Image 1 (cartoon, rainbow, N blue to C red):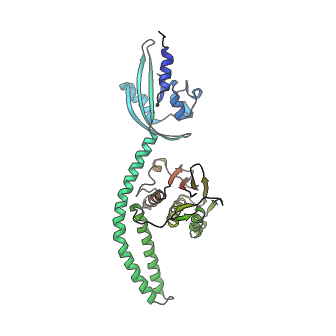
Image 2 (cartoon, rainbow, N blue to C red):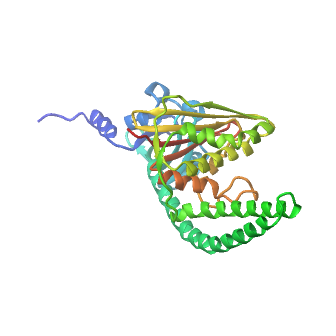
Length: 356
């Protein structure tokens, strides 16, 4: 009978496990890491072996929650299951991790080791958060439908009466001017009501063949001066070969305008906004990036910015703009994502399928 080399067997077994495995000595120095750890966290054995856990990756693993686990919890109870850690790694981004850890004693040498098993739950967390957001939007849709229905008819009646009164007044008169201002206010309120209906999906506007160049240029035609007055330069990179899309121009204008206004408010004194579009033939999509060099969004807020009523503007924002934008882009079978870092600006990316 062939004799099994247990040391080789144990290492091969650990390398088949999906979870990342670390073995630490009593000084928290890494004596072993399996292949899943190297793959998930994009490090090499030379960068890992014989390194103190807190020194790994230029201090990337010096995480307060991990310190608590290794230095406070484990010494008292020898093992721990499903310890939740969320951390942003500079090189690979945010990771949601479930950590299991146990203290083991090597009986032959009477040495203590710590085995740490790390499950990457990032994708599960994203799916869960997406589910929560979908439920919130569905609830918001029901609420919005009721509000929109209740306000639409009275606003239409007020607008019609004001229109009649305005036509009875000389165009040069102060009264006519005041009535025109009231009509403009009614139109603005109607737009707000219309935006609310995006949550409820009660408005089905016509979808046509459109192009990001036209959406961007038409939106900037009536907003660009606001940015000039605020000393904000807008740069465009819209190639002539951009593929067409099927969509609703006014809805996409609403999305772009909301993003631009958010960028404007994030920039103090002066700054720059870049609007860049490109074809992604691999995904058969047209990508639009809106990047600003404003104050950025705190990491703790990034996962909430598409939620109804969430705002980073203290009391000055209703928190509906990006929620409506999210719903519109989803209606276009697209995706909208955000990247941001405090003090370094924000980039929102919209991807929509292009036509053949």
